[in-house]
Length: 195
Image (tube, rainbow, N blue to C red; front, side, top):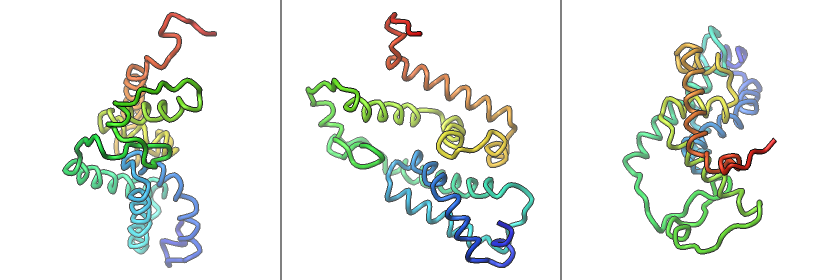
C-alpha cells in the first residue's frame, strides 16, 4: 500500500479496494443495517483513503487505518440515525441479507408457526442481529470488528487505541451478553443435554 500512498498508483488503489471492500462492507452493514446505505458508506471509506494518499505514513498496519476510517463513518452514521430512529408497525423489518422483510405489525399479527429449519433460519438470524444491536456500543464495536471485519485483537486494539486486554475483555463481555440474550435458543436449556 506504500505504492499507493507515495504516488497515488491506480493499480495499488484498485488492489486496496479489492482487498478491503468485502470486510469493510460487512463491518459497516452490522452498524447500518441497510445495504444501499452501507454501500454508500463503503465507497466513502475509499474516497477518504484516496484523499489521504499523500499524508499516509507506513507507521502501522494499513488495515488499521482502513477500519479506523470505517469506524468513524459508522459512528457518524449511528449518531445521525439516532435522530431518525423510531419504531413503526408499517416499516419493513430486516429480512434476509438486509433486504426488507415483514413489517413489525405483520410479525406481531402473524399466526403462522415456522416448523422447518429453513423457515427458522431468518428468525434466528434476526434474533442474533437484534441481540448484537442491544450490546453496549464499546462491546458491539469490538464484536463487529472481530466477527464482521475479521480483525485480530491486536488490530482492533490499534484501531481503537486501547490495550489488547481491554479488547479481549470487551469481547468476552459481548459474548456473555449474547449467550444470555440467546439462551432460549439453546436446546440444552430445556433440560435436554446434548453430547
